[in-house]
Length: 409
Ligand SMILES: Nc1ncnc2c1ncn2[C@@H]1O[C@H](COP(=O)(O)OP(=O)(O)OP(=O)(O)O)[C@@H](O)[C@H]1O
Ligand SMILES: [Mg+2]
Image 1 (cartoon, rainbow, N blue to C red):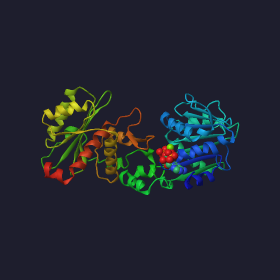
Image 2: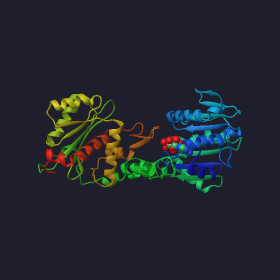
Image 3: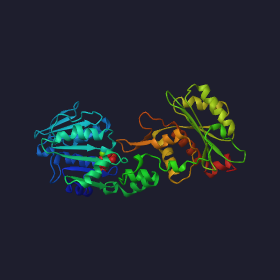
Image 4: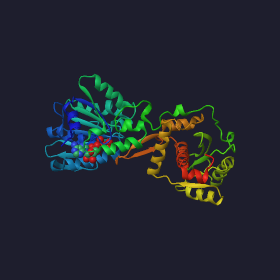
């Protein structure tokens, strides 16, 4: 049984459809129903005896759909080929599942219907659609559905605009709240904890400008009056409190150390280097700490960070461990994003840090939770050091901490 939001969309179906919905609206569920039944007054559907192609951006998402399809179509299946992700039904129609990482996905097939799930997350959507997928619909004058939560103004957005203008296309839109099986409480909680911009994209299904990245108002936070180089800043001894955040480098990554002035809410020192030699990393951090001798250090303690944190403790530096898990990372990143949205943190004009912040991205996992990180090939050490330092500031602003550690704050 489809819910009313889903039925409304299917009733308004045309041959080609873009569907922008919030997370957990029921896109994939609706897609599976579509794959079998098709939509009223629109072409295709396994139940009508025509093959269907299902496309997903990644293997993980594909596998999720494949397993759901197997359960959903169980009574009708004649044969499945798990290797090819192909399912033949007793009426002779077949469902093929493809990942869009395969550039030739769909080539050579003839479909009565294609469904592209999470279309906005596919990197080569335009190429895949125009060169490989669209031609599969020619023989049967088949239909197409692009189901997705938006991700900035990429090709899914372009298709959605086009769908609003052309006769054989339709664009549909629904927020997460249109799914009656998701409680209002759950959505309200997301609204309160997520940065506004992520909530707007993920739950209200809005197409955001500038890529739909995590951090907004980063450039507005840049204060050209702030010093840029680490050695320009030091504790002025005027009772201000500072927090130092550290993200250790490994392999090709940078070690980044960031100092935030708790009172000014400003980044006052930044150090970045690639030597992963323990002694070098410790010496650089120690040198910076000498400029801010009263500042607590919050350092990542995962893997080789553990021994480094212990070494700092042996040096009698006031260090505390920041254990990065997907949950602690998400919490620190979301707090940092909120700080930018509220204009609570100022940054010096450090180009690489600003670039990292602007490029920083989020990805939805099949489980529905978020994973944050740099896009492939990019760095996020600066973002992490900043998020760790800011999490220290958030702790430092608690009255109990201030009384014990920073009475001058
Ligand atoms: N018509 C329906 N009846 C009952 N439950 C539904 C219906 N549609 C969706 N759901 C439930 O809502 C939840 C989300 O559904 P689904 O996974 O299809 O959404 P989605 O929009 O694809 O989510 P995501 O953004 O995580 O990919 C699931 O628990 C699903 O079982
Ligand atoms: Mg889905």
